[in-house]
Image 1 (cartoon, helix red, strand yellow):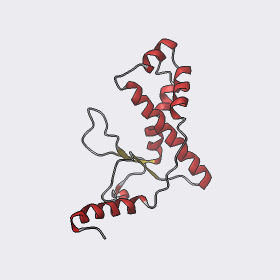
Image 2: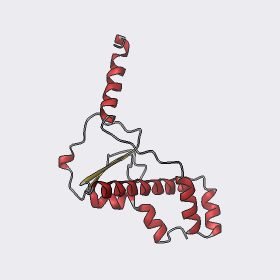
Image 3: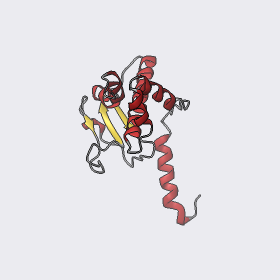
Amino acid sequence: DSPPEFAAEAEKAHLMLSLLRPTRLLVEPARGNDELNALASRNMSSETWRRFSADTTGVSSSLQQCYHRNRCYQLLEEGERQRGFKYDLVVAARVDVLFLASPPLQLMHKDGLWVPDGMDWGGLMDRWAVLGRRTAKMWFGVWHEIIHRNFLQ
């Protein structure tokens, strides 16, 4: 039992644990950035790669996010192949996002995209998203498009 002054915090912690309990996390070795660097350097001129590597404006971190999202999608597909089925909906969320209630997934269209409103900094708020299966391929596949369509040249 928690002291009364910590009851609210204890209740929040219990809620967080109950939300995480059914979740299985797959932890990958920290090889992502090496693979990212190798892929990007093969697909860019040496001058472009030099500028990319030294970038402090956030472009390189955005590309890293694209790469890691793509890796998540690859893991999703591997899991679907192993289990022999495809998910209808995919939820993408940062590890620091806490849902206090389940989103009403029954309202979600199978090919839709559901993102929260606000804090989008002129773009699309990407802290979490609920995606239809086809839409998930586009959401997670930006890195693939960047590399295979030579956007980095």
